[in-house]
Length: 330
Image (cartoon, rainbow, N blue to C red; front, side, top):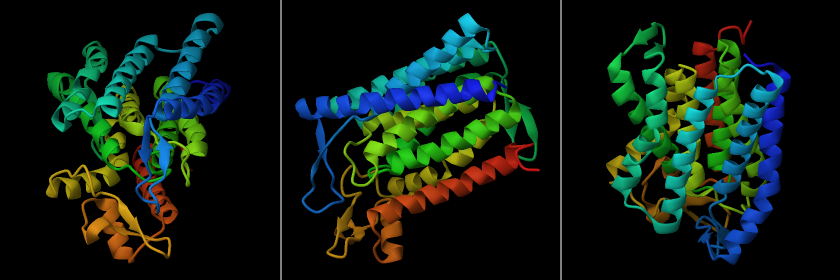
């Protein structure tokens, strides 16, 4: 595993690059008319879209620094794994950009991340095909892992994190918990590459949170929500901890189940803000997990809703650490 100073340098670099990029991204998006309405607030104010661009800049810049440190300063790093993960993440970001600009068909957006998985498929074909399962240990899926599990894992993770979204700070906040957890698991399991991907994403998301937290100055866009899931899948595939990644997206799976039951609605998923500042399901209908929480709570503020989901993600992160984080706890 890379030393702490190396990982800290990557995290700080990602944080600084995203922090530096975000004001320009917000300004450029507004100037280009690429804005969305904050539907969970009275008056539905306009907010800059596609803020995930700043996250991409931070992550790519930080991982390029890691590669440079490997080349010129001798830091141990598997370049094939890092480059495969970066290529997968870049393709997913391009899919998100296209969807943000041109509103792709749902079935196309669902399946395209499988194409983004090809670099990881090639990587797995030359390496391990085993998956670490809870209470069982490594299990070799052979060719099924390469041609089925990796593409499905990437597209599932990307689409799941893309669905549970739409509230100020939720996507980035839950993403921070996910990648902090994966970084700890990387340290516990000695995976330098998984750790680098995780701390790069963590640094970029922490910086993005400053602009996306309530009241948001920018939305993350599909480029950001798809990237979170795609990067999570890339990290755990590289680190052979796919089951841990599956645990971290369990809240998204609950949301997926409710939305699948209602035919994956593209509208009406938000909350109606009452005079008390609390959100209740739009038109009184539950179309997703967030609206279910609104209904069961009798109304909840947007900040309260987001903090609740971040707390839920922390619980699943702790479960993943308990199962896979040998050595983290005494």
